[in-house]
Length: 245
Image 1 (cartoon, helix red, strand yellow):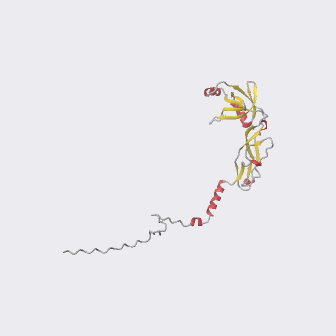
Image 2 (tube, rainbow, N blue to C red):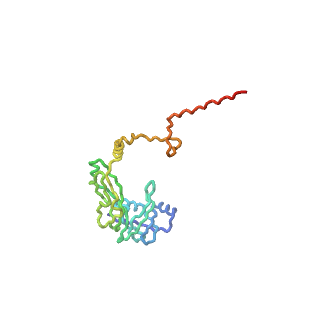
Image 3 (spheres, rainbow, N blue to C red):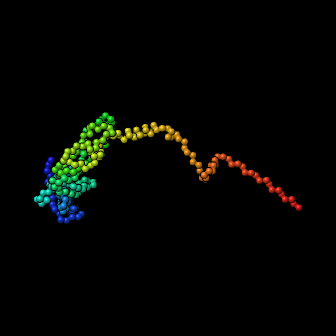
């Protein structure tokens, strides 16, 4: 692995105007800091940072910052890019102690074609693409290469299945899924449709409940059927006419 040395300048002024002046001469602002150390504003070349990001270990590359002839071992902690062109706008550097462990995220790379894909028609669902680990700065792996050729349809590869040695401590839980082999979505939808069609016909053929509308029936009172005809009312006898005298 090549060793990178990034020349840096200390900067006394900060702010948007100073950052514009830096970028106009091909530099970008940055901050150098470490545990128990005061943050130092610096200026570096974005080309140097781009070369580090394109290296095999990428963001986890351990390199030197040369600040006025004094070298410090650092790792790239954070960086900002332009939203359109992707150029680097800002970078933060964390000074490390080689004898003290640090926490970093390492990319996961899958290797091999699973049995569940070749034979059973499944597809790979890549769930966890990075793993958080703790190790010494000199022991940071470039990436984790994981063989998934043995995976059958419906089977999972979990963090507990990984063998990473005793120099690296995984911070993710053992049940975290790295990848698994599943049916394509179209087939899952088709199976769900077949299951729905095969459901018992009684579920759809049940008679609907008849809900009576109108005045509620009091307890102990028989409900009145509106379809029943009303009995004709009894006619009153005509009143007798009074005799005229």
